[in-house]
Image (tube, rainbow, N blue to C red):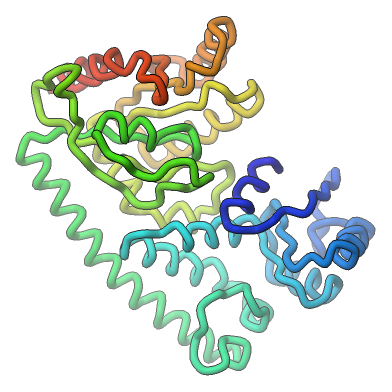
Length: 349
């Protein structure tokens, strides 16, 4: 729930409150029980709420019924909220295309109800918006748009593939940064690549891959030139459609020589294990076989005793991977990290 609050705030919402319900099963009609929905309705009227965000994934029929009970307000589920922040953060033509495609695919199967709901599909599709079109017309237009975007993405991805081939032929080695969102990947990237990418914007600050040479003049000289890639962060239970929206990013990771998995060492144990498990799950499915070096970041704000506990907890999930503690903020153990990178890349040569 705290993570959802962070994402909502990053998307520009003012969070007026949170309502939770513990159930054995999700209500098929309203996601939450009718009594809880009435509680939400009373809160909306009392606080003049304009948007309700559900922390899970809603079906089209659930959104339709919820809107009918709650009135003329915007109803979002977790995936639509994430897509919204993706749209606001996208800075490249590729990421904008990927996000537009994910939106179309995610809302496509919702049918007539989704077409009618103002705000569910943010882009206007003809005069008056999608609500004025019969479902059959909307479906035909959506299929046409999906096909057009897929064609544009194929061209972009072919260029990315050619770039990767050029790097390989030039003897460039690639090291990719990944990990759960807000673990400090971009801060480490800025330090190693002497860049000034924006940080601290909340979840999903980075949406597109960003590649630069490691600037190691003040620390060490690499045997081979090394390209470092910053990439989008993972998040728990990300819908497969949203994950596939970042096909190019995953390809960059899958074709790298080494992955640095950045972990926020300042998290409590439950959060730490949840985030590490999520990262491992995505990597096992999408990046299997790529060497990994686990970097426990933010050691500057963690006690020595607690840091030892974090290493032990991380070892429960990454049993055989090498683990290094670092601080992107103070630079502690960054020279050791560069040494480890050189050792791992040399061993592969």
